[in-house]
Structures are given as C-alpha cells and as structure tokens.
Length: 278
Image (cartoon, rainbow, N blue to C red; front, side):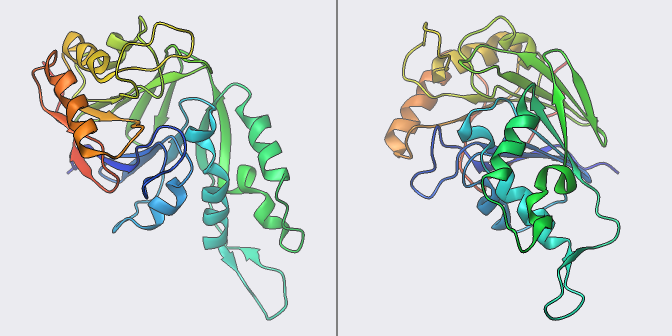
C-alpha cells in the first residue's frame, strides 16, 4: 500500500541561513519515493538532523541562485563519504560496490557551474571526494516544459518569473500533488502550476507585490494564486525573518484572499499533502 504524500521542511529562509534556519530545501515523499526540492545553504546539515532521513530518489533545483543550490556540494560529499570503505590503515578509501548516483535535475548551464564549484575545493589526498557531481549525483539539465520521473513521482517544470531562470515544480504522485514555486513574481504559469493541487508551497518573501524585474511574491499574491488554482492547502515559505508576529501577519494577508488551510513553513515540520482536488 502506498503511503500518502508528505512534505518536510528542511529550510525556509530567503537568502542566507539565519536564526538557526537553513535556506530553501523541501523533501516530498510518497511511500518509498523521495525527492528533494532545492538545496540551499544549511540544507545538508538540516537533512542530517532529521529523525528519519529517507533515501533520495532525486533532487530538483528550481533555479541557480546560491540560496537554492549551494549545499549540493556538501550533500554530494556526504553521500560519497557514506559510501566509502577504508580497506587498510593508510590505504586510500574505495567506494562501496553498488553505489547508485542520485539523479540531480538542474536548469541549463547548471552542470558546468557545479563542476566549477567542486573544483574550487579539491581534496588532493582523497580524489574521490572531488567527484560529487559524477559519482554521488548524475547531473541532468532540464528546460521549461520538461517532465521527469523519479520512482512513482512525476515532476513537471513550468517557467515562472525571476531574475534567474526559474521553473516551478509540480510533483504528482499516486495519492496527491504538490506544487512548488521556487522564486517567482506573479506570472502566467503560476495558477496552472498549482491547478487542483493538494498543496501549494509558495514563497512569500515580500510585504507587497513586486512589479519589477527581480520577481518575488507577497503572501497575498500566494493566497490569490492558491484560490484561483483551487489548491486544497497553502504553505507559505522563503521568509526574511523568523519573527512570529511578522509571519502571522503574512498568514493573515493570505487568509484575506484564500479560504483554505494555511501553514507557515518551519524547519523539521512534516505536513500531509491533501489528495487531489476534484
């Protein structure tokens, strides 16, 4: 029997980690299938501190801003370290037989960028640790409109509006659908991304609508998108602060335009994704 889809917040901060909270990172699981959406600074540490850390079936990066992808290198080295054997004192480590690289989906240009990142920090005495992006991960570039399959999960990539190319990610399983915005301003694909989803995981960075070229949402923007899309629930994330009064005010903004349940992302919190909306 397939378990219901669940989402675990690993990190929820806009920009750099603060107040003990990591930048963007979210686990989506259904049964034995688990995908990580974004991997910003602090996410590798956050994953290590979860009570139960499921095996990753894949990683999807919404866009190549540092606060959404920088911890891919520490995570890759962590995966490699866990797969190493030390056959004899003083002998170089070897990879355990049967290690399977985790599929890592990044926007166009991401593969070269990650190779450059890994090259900045060589471990000359253990060269295996320099191969995060060909041994720990299998890097695959995607484009807007692509769909990828990770176990029993299918993820669609929809182009949204941000200062770096960003795709919202719609994860469809057998029991539910989760839509994740990455970073975006208001955009034509925002409502199709979340249409009928059980959960819209939406950034709510700003207090007011951003009409400029950078592209971020306010909580009210996120609430309107959830209402127009008919999403069954809304999770606000990508916060600039951990101040509770400020976050509750953002919840109130969204609640003024969206009648469904609204959650504020909190690291370590796991939420069930409601089933599909008829």
